[in-house]
Length: 355
Image (cartoon, rainbow, N blue to C red; front, top):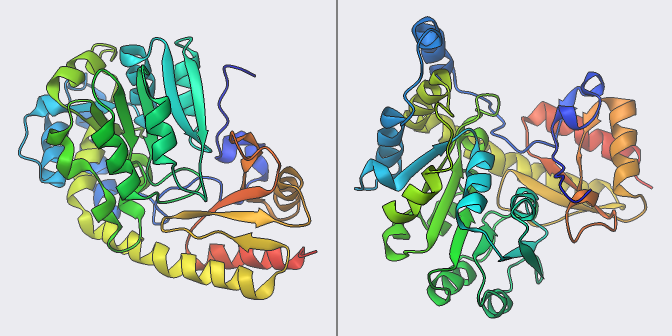
């Protein structure tokens, strides 16, 4: 369907069948106990009043967390990162955009809703083809970049910088860093946030859904210069982020220990999962990853068949990648990294059906 976008999560299938969801790539530790305690303490007062439509305290917390000495008008807050993606398209997309593929489908959907012509640029060896993107970006309204890329993982920061240094205003670059905080040790150095003042055509997107386990509360934000931010925020509806979500997000940003603990768990468990698959199976090939999910290439079974079999037999849901542009062959599934006991159940299920 031309105006649809497929996602993982328990509601992508019959939710009654799902016991373990490996199709959603969120913090394996979930929401922190510190945030839960804060929500419980303030839920009565927050529920009975309208939230701050400007998200002032949350914006202040975001700037402190990012260690940016900037004004609040550099920050826009959304009901999840997806709201900002669609507001970005409404604000800046009119005729033509460039999207590397495979990647998150909402960039394509948001652009289609603006009747834009989309130029897809295939990844080269699971990395962005900077030269091709730069060449095809001529006269484009926007370029969408995702790093770490969903579903392939961390991209070359040098290639991203090359694109940013070569593409100038009025072409706007949306750089989605929604998973950057869950990258292995040292990966945060791949973030471009610290260089945001150097580019007048860059919008950086982040999501608290992934990093801090706030999927159900829906909080995302963007960083860009106030000129772009004013245009982006003009498409924002009043009270778009509820008071509980604002409070929880502000609290989560201060609980950095929760994020550090999650990152260490992800690195350890991803190594365990990938090593196990390589040693114990012949039909499944894990692809290199630096983040809290990875692709598995399938040799003797199609992705939809595997997803349905695991779901119906074991209650385990993996992400069927057949809906990603560029992965339609049915050779790939994506799995998230969860806690050890859950990961072990997935691995045992894969081993039991190795063909």
